[in-house]
Length: 158
Length: 284
Image 1 (spheres, rainbow over the protein chains, first blue to last red):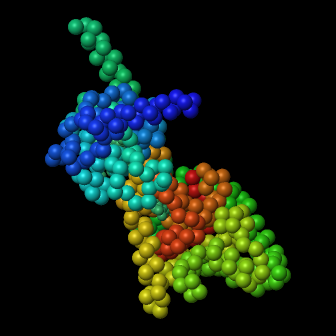
Image 2 (image 1 turned 90 degrees about the vertical axis):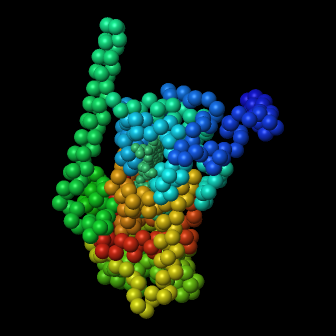
């Protein structure tokens, strides 16, 4: 158990080092820079350099410890009870926004509305009194952002 | 061609079922919300824009609060009454030895906490005040903030104010002294915190009445504490509630009885002025 963990973290270290040394593929290991990524009202490029997986995105969006989007939004997920109504209904949201705009809202809704209650799902800094276990972390990973985005893009008005 | 048609018919049927389900859920919610909104009891729990947490509870939870035999907070109140009447400490006196019947001497007292403490030049919450009283004046032992005994005693004392309005304790004489504490409490309430980066105000003012999944967000009023919470299966102090709301946004909580929470409680008390005391309230 311990040994395999060691190998994993060693592999992680190698990948991390490789990235910092020069591979430019964006990834979680590389520091995400909102100012650089943002273009107008959106983030046009995938945070992972690849498209996300909509099916995974759906479950990450619903997961209480990850996206927990249902705390505030309605989604077309009738198997889930109790959708929140703090934010707008997300059914049809892809007909209202382009993918780049949706990505910026996921990463940092506060960029567009500084007073918003919607958390910045992929920002590490700028917080007050974060609990120790969450310090230096983002709510969801770059991969999660791309997966949820791939799911949101399927939510077209019928 | 035909295959495609069948598929889209199936898809439309599926959609119909999904839309139907979503509608049913929202109808059930609308029913409960309407029942809540039309409950004739509301008038005792709403003053102008201010609403007690009672208004946001299900009818069942309200029924529990309203009936002293059903209200699960009362076993603690009973324990508090025993402590009130029991001789304690080296001085050998009970609370009742000096204060006689709580129903007279403690009426309206709930309102006066947190109060200014000239000794520490800070605000002091009722739990800290009682502990000092018990240790310094009665030669007794400190009770833990969230212990059954302390909770019961506070609930028993506050019960004597039930039905009386929460009043602001700020007046022309003490305004200059109290203003900085009030300002600190308000600042805490409005400050974003934790990884989710939310302030108390976001949930309890901007979106009060909205649904956060199955929770209806209330205005975060303090007038029922210590409150019996069904989720806790016991009563809890308002500082426990603060701690829970802090952790929910992934923020580091403060200690019960800390200056920060005491100032926050003081701010909430002034903000609640006009509502009536409900201790022991029952909440989901």
